[in-house]
Structure formats: structure tokens, C-alpha cells
Length: 175
Image 1 (tube, rainbow, N blue to C red):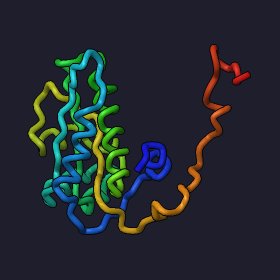
Image 2: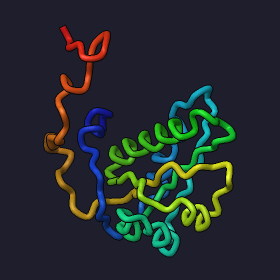
Image 3: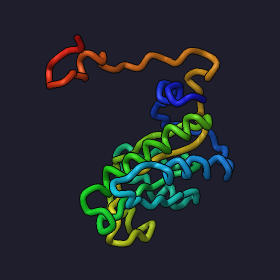
Image 4: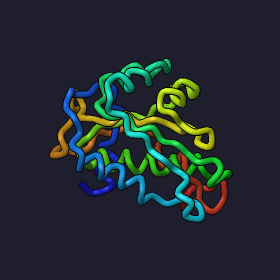
């Protein structure tokens, strides 16, 4: 799948089939995160891959995270604030987003989760104090495919480019 197609097909999936993600597919998704850029190449990330149903259930405390119990994989993105005090969150976010696109290209669905209680996740996963829990990604095969990759991508409800981009200075439209 070409990268622009993955960008257009990507959507937030909150319902998954009870089908495990094959190890080689999961490794390719994680590898995409590992290959992501970072400030000064510090690579201040660590990813906890949670497949155990009991632990996944322990991640569902956030107001919008209940569906994590049925996601076959949850990737918890951690940023090392000691290794990169200024850029650990941005760099980890870049790596997680790269994983989202890689997962989409593999035919997987994902959902970005910012709804969690850091202290509970930290305790459940034994996360050291130097690491910040940036976000979690649910990963798995969508219960219902909205569309197949053989059809044109759906049109997302997004603002037009002319409303969100300026050229040379703020507010200046493209000539």
C-alpha cells in the first residue's frame, strides 16, 4: 500500500475481531516506530506491547478506553524525559503515528488513546519514573471493514487545505 493511500484509509477503530495479530506483522509495525526520526537521534521512546487479556483490561480505566479490552494488542508509547528532556513527547508521538500508518498498510485498525490514568498504567506495566506515558494505540483487525482497499478511499470530514495552510506568512493564501 502506498503511503498516501494508508493516510486516506486510516481511521479510528474501536471494535476488533478476536483474531491475534501475527508476530511478523506486529514486528513490522514496531519496526516502523523504531525507524522514525527523533531530535539529535536520541530515540527517547520505549514501547510496551500488551497482549495479555488481563493486562489489557487493566488499561480500560480511562473514560474513552473501555474498548481496549477487545483489542488484541495495545502498544503503550513511553518517552524518556531524561534522554531527551525537551523532545521526548514529540519524538514518541512521531514514532506512534508512523506505527499507525504501518498498521494501516498491514490491514490493521488502530485507535490513538490519550484517555488513561497515568498512575494506574505506570503501576500495571511497571514503568520507571524517567519515562512518561505519552499515548496508547489499540491495534487489531477491525470488526467491520468500512471499505475495502480496492475501492477509492472514503472522504474524511476535514477542513479544506486553504483554511489550514498559509504561504510565506500567516493568513496569506497561495498565489
